[in-house]
Image (cartoon, rainbow, N blue to C red; front, side, top):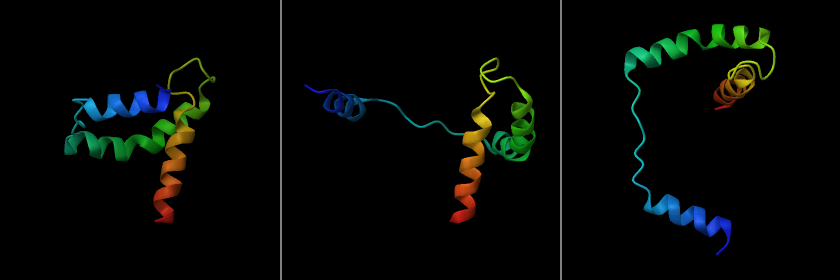
Length: 67
């Protein structure tokens, strides 16, 4: 069985359920994400787990603007 079929089987039989973010946390994430990106840009790459996540967040924000 190839890897793709194995992954599909795992996903179909998974009991994973998407989590829920409470409004208070969602508001904080939305409010502070720009500040977090600015801090992450100043971090040395790979010294901090979030040192390059800002690029992902910025791409998501750009995609929202295109909708």
